[in-house]
Image (tube, rainbow, N blue to C red; front, side):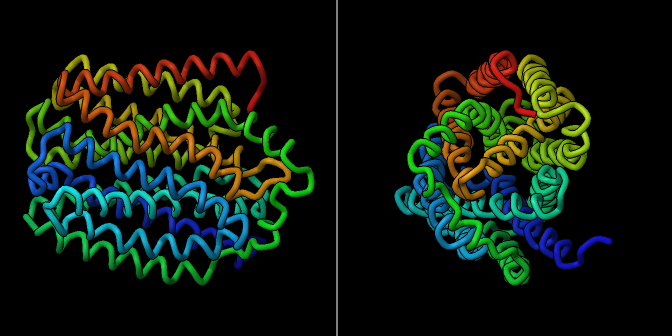
Length: 388
């Protein structure tokens, strides 16, 4: 019989994943309007988005350390609160330095929340006794898909940005308050972080994680690019309305959701390594279609394939990093996320600069190159060792 307490723990952790995806998708789905509100071009938008990257990169190692010291259950409560507060701040000012400061805060809160909620997910999976890690990321994607849809609805009714973001952040905060009371206590686990065997195990863990960190970097550059630029691609390159642009982003989110809902099944069926290679090929094909054939339907089809392709790579990488011996889940995940999220946050602003200089299609071509590079890494590690 299923343990009722463990089921509640799983629902609570899933709630954090849902809120993270839901809130993030709400504001990114209205990014074209935010860009107009700020009065900035693509390069300037890229510069602003860079501060999300900076905040995240600074905060994630700290979040991993704090999670190891005090337990991910304690730290995720604080980071979730900060993330909910950060969302409405993105539309409070048109002063570029104020904007940058708010985006830095948003990145720090989002990155820290991501590390600690994944640490909780590892603990739940261990207690559950079977592969379920992808299901948490499925809930994140469900949150993103619903968030994109909600953003499209708010946009179609021309609800002011600030009112929209305050309402959805309040909703997210209420969910997190409930979920915070149902988490797994992991202070004991956290205190088992690498201390008994010293620097050797730390270096071994880093060497083990590094190739998968690079895979996460390429994957999350693509994911971040779809989140931040898919609506703008449909709006400015394909030439469609802001409402349809929000739905284009939603297509990517729906595909991510489908891939992650069935991700645990396919991990067991194909193995981690083979599934990641399939994922890489789908991503290459999807983005190639979107860039080669600029139309409404090729964009929808391409974004859908990209979503499927990227759906299970990060769950596989994070699950592996969170289950290393002699290191806490938060510490292991923070090592992987510090590399992976560098791509998630630095990729979109880089594309902004490339888009301003050469056009958005060329900018996203950089992501296509990274997908090909990711496939190359997977071929290399398949010859060196197995990740299954």
